Image (tube, rainbow, N blue to C red; front, side, top):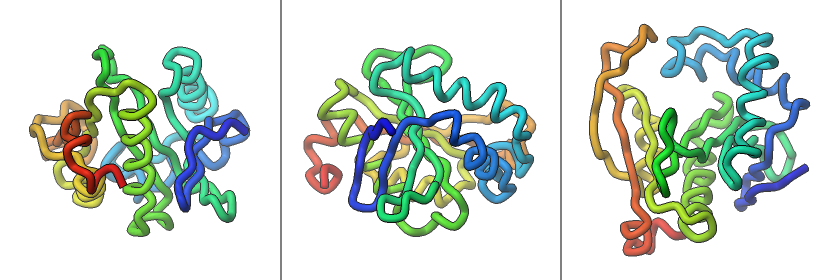
Length: 189
């Protein structure tokens, strides 16, 4: 197992093909997928044939960046995943996207904030990141609160261009620069 990062309660590691079942369960939860696909689950075949290969491919294309399984450190239980990757579709030098998707049972326990803060710290101190950004549907108040707790601030709102339930609502972008992170000791925990 290739451990990428540990926090007091989390272990972030690379995905493997053995994670297909946990990934299918996570992406099959209507609650988890509410603000992503409008509660439509992702078929297991799509997880196996498209999503998991895409996640695994990040490790070769972008050293130190990609998608990371989030496990409970004490039990080894699958909690979800974090992403820390170059902007898509056009990467910008020094700019990295932060994201997370956790099981419903892991919501409200501080895991998303804990993992986000650790990834931001690693990005700014070890990986040469200059700016971290995250996006969410404007009505996704839980995700927006995580971004704020991790030190990101609202940068802009913009329209979502797909047919997911709630697409009539704007998307929001939050961001944090290395300079702002360095000047705010509370974010560096």
